[in-house]
Image (cartoon, rainbow, N blue to C red):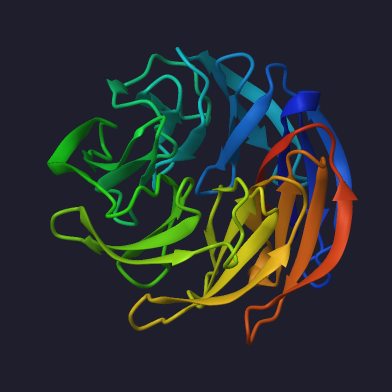
Length: 340
């Protein structure tokens, strides 16, 4: 079945659509879809039928139907929001759009219509704190987590209970967990088989692992590992984070050092070990694994280019396989498989 990539190019007010060759990792341009307002963050529904984009210049969330035959996008809805969404995701059932607002100091939950569209008033619009940077539900769709960076935020991960039937959220007990260090949790991913979450730490230039108590929906920190080489003292922040479907490898980009930190994962304990640091494009804000985790794609927000890396399936090591121009300010990459 064919694979498609969607890249939000904020500065050019578009989402670019590519086909992905699963054997070579090569990308073939298919279309540029105009999205006025600076699309920045994206999410694809669990059934791969709809795409959602949060815009940075015009404060809105836009929904698109994905053509299952050719990957094309057709806008089918939009909703204005009170701040620009830093991050959006759907819940695990694809019934709600979850959103986090860095400057807006809120999280939101919007209903998704039967046609996959957004457009209604939020079910939840809850004040948290400045620096809210992501929001996802856990694999059971019972809990939700919202990291807040440090300095411009409280250096905290807010813990919620999520009602998958109504979309309502409520604070868990305790309502937050604070990292041991001044790390600034930003984005996170779930290990595919362990009850473990990994957070990229914006200020700490690190990745921190947390164990998830599935009965209570609470997190407990167990490890922090650096993403930058010893002796590097220039300004650097971490951005997105990806874990392979095998659970064996994890990747986190550095903005400043302009690289991707690679880790191997102990699939029994979830512990991370450094597996090298690979140069990437300037300010690699967006990161996404491709089909079969054989390739990883990193978009440089300053360079306007995509770095393509092959992933050694045995070692997890990265090798630069190509570079592709994207445009002004690419901010997000999403890949999905369609029936074709």
